Image (cartoon, rainbow, N blue to C red; front, side, top):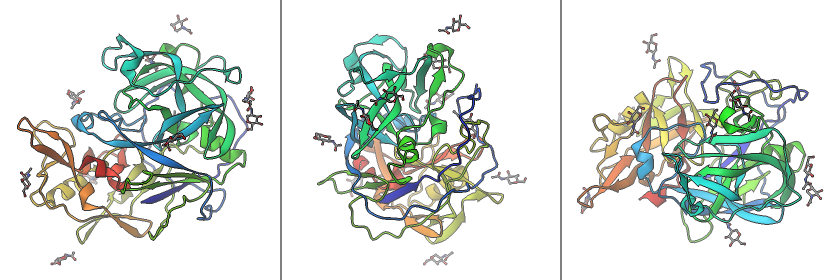
Length: 423
Ligand SMILES: *[C@@H]1O[C@H](CO)[C@@H](O)[C@H](O)[C@H]1NC(C)=O
Ligand SMILES: *[C@@H]1O[C@H](CO)[C@@H](O)[C@H](O)[C@H]1NC(C)=O
Ligand SMILES: *[C@@H]1O[C@H](CO)[C@@H](O)[C@H](O)[C@H]1NC(C)=O
Ligand SMILES: *[C@@H]1O[C@H](CO)[C@@H](O)[C@H](O)[C@H]1NC(C)=O
Ligand SMILES: *[C@@H]1O[C@H](CO)[C@@H](O)[C@H](O)[C@H]1NC(C)=O
Ligand SMILES: *[C@@H]1O[C@H](CO)[C@@H](O)[C@H](O)[C@H]1NC(C)=O
Ligand SMILES: *[C@@H]1O[C@H](CO)[C@@H](O)[C@H](O)[C@H]1NC(C)=O
Ligand SMILES: *[C@@H]1O[C@H](CO)[C@@H](O)[C@H](O)[C@H]1NC(C)=O
Ligand SMILES: *[C@@H]1O[C@H](CO)[C@@H](O)[C@H](O)[C@H]1NC(C)=O
Ligand SMILES: *[C@@H]1O[C@H](CO)[C@@H](O)[C@H](O)[C@H]1NC(C)=O
């Protein structure tokens, strides 16, 4: 599928002192607002600023979003895939995983310390299975009195320093703020050396001070793509094209336009919704994730509203999350529509187990008036094998809960239709 995300141009206030924030975890304000864009949507034109994507199979994939703390046995079982692309730091090129669910573009530093995710015990660097490491050069200018500290949804965590470096992505060079990671609990894939975070400034994870253990005050910064479009180097949109046929590139990331693919799909447009109210003066309009509302979930031929008591649920569009995370009533309805039905195991989380040979329901997601049908092969995913060597299968839809203030609904891999890895 081809997905393009347009950055509404934000009105920027003066760069005033940064507000304190002692609550790094997300709590949603139940009021959902649609943003007021400061310019019209960028035209849908192909660009020459694109990169090919490679597909990375990870035995222990991250649930992508930095903030999505998932408590799921599923995630540790999945042999899911992520995408990476080449990014040049100064004159050193690395493959980085592409993540629309976080905002920091970081690279591992040559002298980093690798620790255990569960015990924090010291490990060899090799245990983190990182790709090649970045070596600081005189061009790298460290930002004093700031540090980087992030915990991803699957429990991986990193700390490091921040500084300026010239980054080149899809032929565009920009001097931007980046974290350099020197302390990592990371389960790598042996080739990628970090992450390319394409989210908004609000989700960056820089803090005031030099000791990560003391982190409480955020030091927001403009991530790479924000820096590019603010400097007028690129139109404020990027797109991802995901290929199911892996005989060529696994897909494309295009900056400022559409990638060089032929497409017949109908485009739809929908506002990015603001799920929380701003309280920082530096970024007065607080976009955080790529959250959108859906009009409806179509189950076979029945259209179910994606709303509770008239309030629409919002969903994060996240290139790094494996499944779609739905509100309970919709997830239950989908599960019941498999033949035979998908079921929860006692004492389990939001996973629905399903016969690998089941018939999946037709699942359409109506966004901006257009219904996108999910490929049935993405509706049943192999999550592991049982003691007898038989496959264990799960639904492509996860039950996230029903509380829009605490639960994070996601359109992930099941929506992006790139789950062929798992079949
Ligand atoms: C990154 O660049 C190298 C060297 O040109 C190339 O072999 C590799 O396929 C590229 N990776 C991706 C994901 O395009
Ligand atoms: C989920 O979290 C609860 C409470 O923290 C814990 O008891 C349970 O073991 C966790 N489940 C999984 C699958 O990690
Ligand atoms: C990037 O910008 C910073 C801050 O203005 C500057 O100190 C640094 O030298 C610049 N780096 C490069 C590579 O131009
Ligand atoms: C860094 O990039 C800027 C353009 O953004 C360029 O003017 C400058 O010469 C570059 N610095 C180095 C050291 O390459
Ligand atoms: C971290 O906080 C502790 C306790 O407040 C303080 O003693 C220490 O100096 C702080 N460290 C740094 C590097 O600021
Ligand atoms: C990251 O920051 C939190 C406080 O926000 C702190 O508890 C944690 O120890 C820090 N991580 C590391 C690895 O220092
Ligand atoms: C992001 O924006 C929200 C308000 O929308 C604010 O409460 C929060 O402090 C900002 N920063 C982070 C890191 O969440
Ligand atoms: C759905 O399709 C079935 C079989 O074609 C039909 O019997 C049923 O009335 C339809 N339901 C709706 C709501 O259109
Ligand atoms: C809708 O409102 C009713 C009555 O206030 C309440 O009982 C119910 O839990 C609400 N449903 C949801 C999904 O919030
Ligand atoms: C699915 O069906 C095939 C044959 O049609 C059978 O070999 C396989 O065991 C079945 N798998 C499950 C999980 O029932």
